[in-house]
Structures are given as C-alpha cells and as structure tokens.
Image (cartoon, rainbow, N blue to C red; front, side, top):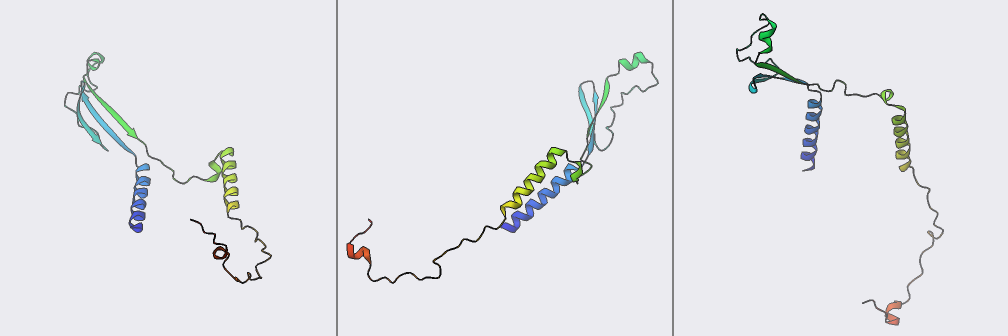
Length: 135
C-alpha cells in the first residue's frame, strides 16, 4: 500500500512539473457577441463575414466580427541558483541550515555513578508485610 501511494504521488508531481512548463494559446472568433469558433494551438476558423483590409476605414468600423487570443505562458526555468536569491533570503536559508544541522548534534553522554553496582537483594516483599495495597 505504501509503495502504491509513493508511486502515485511521484506521478502526480511529474505531471505538475510538466504542466507548469507547458504554454498554450486559445484563439476565439466572435461574430457580434456570439462565439463562433475556438481553437487551441491554432487559429480559429472565421465565419466568412470578414471584410478584409481592402475596404475603406468606414466599412472596417462597422465590422461585426472579432478575434480574441488568450495566451498562457509556462515557466521557462525550473532550476533556481543560489546567487539569484536576494540577501535576506540567503540569510534566512543560512540560518535555517545552521539550526537544522544543530538539531542532530549528539548530546554528551551522561555519567551514571552507580551503574557498576547491583541492587540489594530482596529479603521480603514490604507491601505484603505491611499489607499496603493500591486499589
């Protein structure tokens, strides 16, 4: 079960990296206020009512069709180097690593003066002799 969970998390993280670097463009063609066509990675198909640039300026003002382009840019650089960090970020990183490695510093060994001596022999059980019981 643990192996399956680990593999699924690895696949999800790989897909996250893939989609964070992925960039695409959505092109939409409107006639008036109605969406006629939308296309991803290519140009949207026109409805055939485009007047073209050969008409004069007055005709182009009355033009009812419009194209809208939405572009999503992905991340270009995935590996950040340490010298691109600002000074306060470098100081926080340095302090964090210093404190983190200080957590794993071995503690001094405690001296137990009576570890070589054995406990005294039990002659009689004092609870039974005095009849003191915890209830």
